[in-house]
Image (tube, rainbow, N blue to C red; front, top):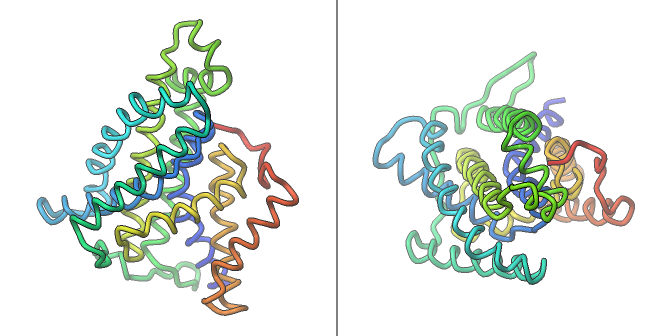
Length: 285
């Protein structure tokens, strides 16, 4: 049972780190290959702010997330939006270029040494009903659930959410009724980047990060999003739980060196059986 709980909590972290990727695909229909760098830059920025102002990492992650969101807005508005007019492949290539550039800048600024964010709960454990669990993963799972609830409420109950859903369903019709689709898309990427930055801080609380770690976390996030159903926020949460559980149990059965084989093998099987994901009927962003 403790092993199962560990897998579910690891999956909660995976889901939190994948929410931004799912949101962007659900609305803009774009695979953001720079998503992993949003995660890692969020972790590094939080670490830098902590060194200056101190405090709790989860609180410091909020201004760090806002900064990442402010940087992501012009990227979508002035770089990716014009490319979307020409083809759906061009923005993917552009985000790959952004990913490579950001990795290079992080290497120049911080070298390749791994970095972690330390807090009282980063390495501690709590026991609930006799089951031990890592505090940092429990916090990450709770934050992931809260973010899904908040994003779901915003998308379904607010004026901005109605604009986002209209732009996602039919951009041309949305523009005809007065919605600034380019501005909406840019806001969506800003929100997704901010959520990713929070996820990056949670990663650094549980594991070490380095400038090249974004690629591996992007692959995990992509696996979660595909399993849960592309563009589905609640499906992303469930997909994260599945990936974490399969990875933990697979490592126990086959050995930790086969973690990636088990996870990506599951991805291949799901793509063959249900290309739209296991939970494609779940409410989409």
